[in-house]
Length: 154
Image (cartoon, rainbow, N blue to C red; front, side):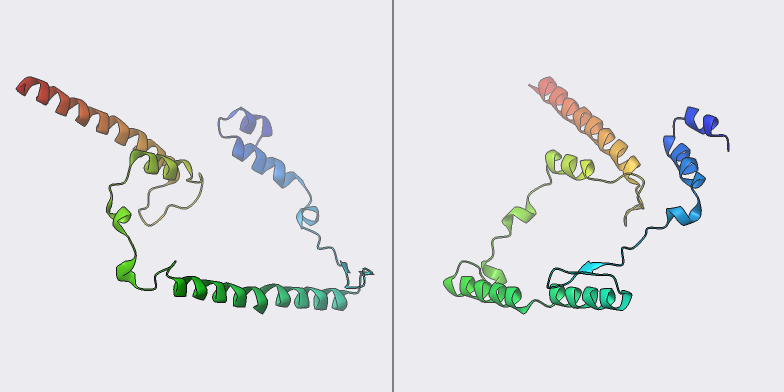
């Protein structure tokens, strides 16, 4: 493809794809820095030592028992004090039965990411945004129709 032709198109993504393909394939690979700082503050560049350091760091990162134990004790104390109910019958869920507001829909639609796979409803984000605008239009038409009917009957 000609880069000038791509540049003139409204979809600039294709242009930047073509620019990205110009680079040499080896330059595109991310280079992993094979060096770490050990516990004494020295730089280690031996590949096996670097891998071992990564392994121990990740093990301590994901297996930290102190934080999880404190959280569980704190959570248990709050349940014992009655701040948190463990009985589902005592939890107030009435707010979950309220109608969804226009503001909630607007926030959800604004957080959709474009050019991503559609969800379970098979509606792409680009279409959802248009459907939201259409729903506002229809909602306003229904409100006006109700107002007109109530004015005619009064």
